[in-house]
Length: 172
Image (cartoon, rainbow, N blue to C red; front, side, top):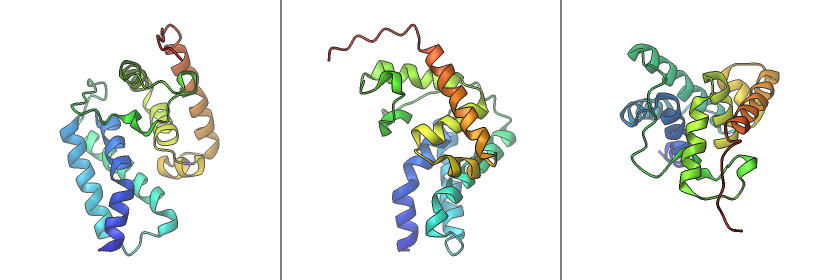
């Protein structure tokens, strides 16, 4: 259906990159992303265009949690990326490292994001990398709006701390 294709085109990468971030494993991410696509298909009638993004990301988040619980995954597993379509390709870099396309730096930032506590990481990824508004993040994660802002500040602060010693050898 047209509506389904539209949602898939619009949200496929967001869904997939969130699953990768959460599950830290390509095959698991594929599995969960597939489940999300099925859910979207099954619920086409009730998904409202205006709130589609929130509904879809909330579903993605929930399915990731279910999957992780079922597999009792150790969330600390190494993040492996076999393809260069990394989390940060959406060019939403952290402010201290604006406009730096260096792959090494991207990898490093990604690894630092990975070290954040789960709650901060989810908020950071949804907001900074996936570009959701605070209100949307609050709905997806089912936490108060205020917590979203606090977590985001903490996440940014921790990342800046973690990136403090980073030498950036770029010529401008």
